[in-house]
Figure 1: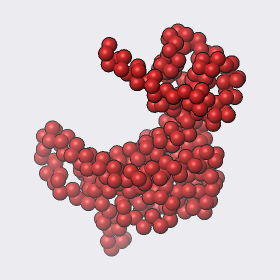
Figure 2 (figure 1 turned 180 degrees about the vertical axis):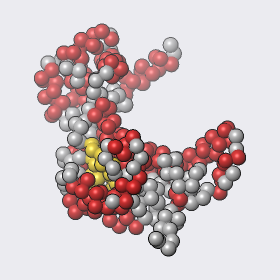
Figure 3 (figure 1 turned 90 degrees about the vertical axis):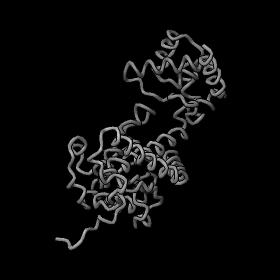
Figure 4 (figure 1 turned 120 degrees about the vertical axis):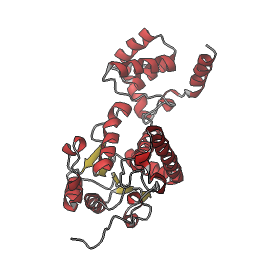
Length: 317
């Protein structure tokens, strides 16, 4: 048995002096306490702004070279990485193998907590090895404490493969900074409930991961303005969104947008280029490829004035 705790010095394990009597408070005061702590969390993320932007540049360069994004984590951190991975194909039309996630304990740990598996260093290494990481890939290692053996094993394997490593943690003092290419460490401080890193640490991590993935996808042409032009139309809601995007960009009526999308095989980008440039589907796809998949370059037109015009019209309706 250890003679002392190796976790007690972690910021997220500390006792929060602002919530010592939280178990005696009415619900509204508990909510107020949590909102106060979340404001501190947002300020901590803001302080990491420049590092997050560097992370976006690292990921963007990797994607342009044909690399992948691989998230690695245990517990809440692992589930957050998995959520990012799962959301990329429907939102940005990515291939399922482009953004991957490794969670300690595998799929079973997503719905049912299996906290003990995070202690397996070798399993972390093996889990990443199975994905055959390369120097073109970016491995985003997520660990609120920075001490999880599973994550350390994964990090070691990724380093041996030559992958770029971004480490997202809530412990700015972690010594793992010396083993990675970039550390993003919002100092969120003690949790409302001591040690419950699904709270501020989890929320801060989610915000950071959102920024890393979303900004990177924007930088490789997955949006046109702020429109989701690479959306995968797998549901009626998403098909409706695709039709509305076409009406916004081209001025077509809703039914005409539907007919255009059907001719474009529900490829929103292709539909825009077809309508704007008067091209067939095949020629529109060819033009998009020459434009590195950027709609703006493919049609030589900025969508911002159109969006501002529509917003102004809506404001006066």
